[in-house]
Image (cartoon, rainbow, N blue to C red; front, side):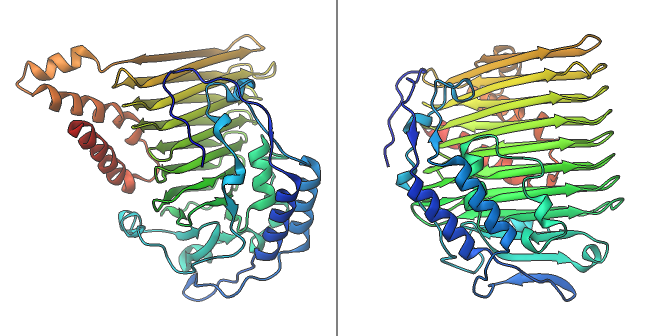
Length: 466
C-alpha cells in the first residue's frame, strides 16, 4: 500500500479518483451471493458457526443494484472539499484492498475474550468477523419481550429499516457500504421496553488486505430505553473498513450508544454515524478512538422533534504517525432542542488529529441550546491538532456556543502535583490520564472503561520508554 510520511501539518489537495465501475459491480454480485437469513430459537436465541450462505432477499438485491447504478463510477473525495480538508484522503487507493466474498473463518476470533468478560451480563451479543456474522444470541428474557438483535434481513420491518436514517448516503463511502455490506445488523427495541442489560456488538477484522463494510441499524421505539456497546477491533492486518451506523429514536426514546475503535495500526477506517432523534427523545453517543493508521469518524445528529436531546462525546489519543479525524454536524430542526458536544484528544510523536464541527440551527428551532467543545493536548513538538468549530444560526432565542483549545499539558496542574512530591514524568501521566475521565465516566457501558484505561496506560508506557 502507498503510505507517505507526513513531515508538516499541511496536506496538499489530491486529484479526484475513481474506484472503477467494474469493481463496484463485482462487489454488488458478491454481496448478493453472501447475504444470509437466520432463525433464532431456544432458551437463548443463538447462532454460531452458521451454515452456508443463502440468497439475499429480492428487495436487498434491488437496493444494492439501484445504489450501484446511481453512483456509477464512484469518485473519491479530495481535500479540496471542506469536509475532507486536512485529511489524508489523497493517500487512499481502494485497489489496495479486496472485498470479502464469503467468510474465511466461521468461529469466534481470538482476542475478544476480555471484551466479553468486561460485560458479563448482556441482553444480546453479536460478533461480526470480516463483515459476516459468526455469533449471535439474544437472552430469552428479552427476546420474549420483543427485543430483536441479529441479521437485519430476518428482523422486523427489515426493508424499511435499512437506509431509513442515512437515506441515499452522506458520502461515497456510505454508498459503497450500501452496495457491499454483507451482513447488516439490526437492533430493534419495541415501544415501552427498558432493556436493563447492554447489547454488545464486536466487529473484528483479521484478513490481510481486505475491504469490509459493516452496517448497523438501531431502532428504539417510543418510551423505550437501551444501551449498546459497538466494539471495533482487529488483528495486526492491513485493511480498509467503512462502517455505517444508523440510529433512529422514536418519541421519548433513550439510547446510550458507546463505540470503541481499537483497530490495528495498519487499518484505514472511514466511519459514519447518522441519527434521527424525535420529540423528547435522548441520544447519548460516546466514542473512543485509539486505533488505526488513518481513522475517520463522521457524526451527523439531527434533532427532529420538539424537546429532542443529543449528547455527543469522544476521546482520542494518537501516537506514532496516526491520523484521527472527526467531523460532526449538530442539526436542530425543531424547537426547544438541545445538543451537547465534548470531544477531548491527545496527540503524541508525529500523530495528527482533526476536528471540524458545525452547529446548524434552523428557523423553526427557537429555544435551542447547542454547545460544542473540542479540547486537545499536544504532547510532542512534532504532533499536530487541527480544531475548527462552526456555528450557523437562522433564528433568535437560542443559546449556542463553541470552543476549542490546542496546547501542552497544563503547567499549573503539573506544578501542583510536583509541589507535593510527585515526579515530573508521573505527574504528566496523571494529568493526561485524568484528562479523559470526564468523558469516560459518562460512557454508556461502563464495564469496558477499564479496558480503555488500560489501553491509555499502555500508550503512556510507550511514551515513557521513548
